[in-house]
Image (spheres, one colour):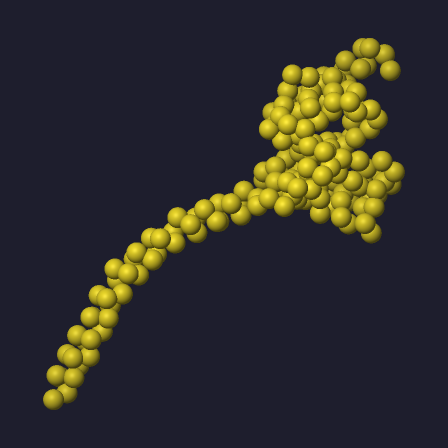
Length: 176
């Protein structure tokens, strides 16, 4: 490949990765076209983008960015996955597909980068066990609302009981 073509491809990769801070690298070497198309469709449903790139060209395109550590010391072809709701949901989806040995046997998580730090395959699997953004928000909302609900019940409980007793007394007086 001539230097001119390499520069064009590098510029295209840089454009595609513009604004991407975190990504997962996967290997899909040996997958047939139909399976790859199916995989891309599943990822697209989750707003995840995947494109195959030569690691050396990706390394050149990612120089000076948060993604640079992901491509250090690597050669050959790799697929870059990014997008999704947040990084944890991206990793969870990639690991889920990696575990599917019947449909995607040749799909494997190779590593990635999160907040400018390189992740190996084990690191990616560890991140997949973290709670996603939605799960964290739900937990936080529960923790915030819990004490308020307890306080509200403590304040309203005796008043409701008194109201109920007064109502019974008034109903009883009307009958006599």
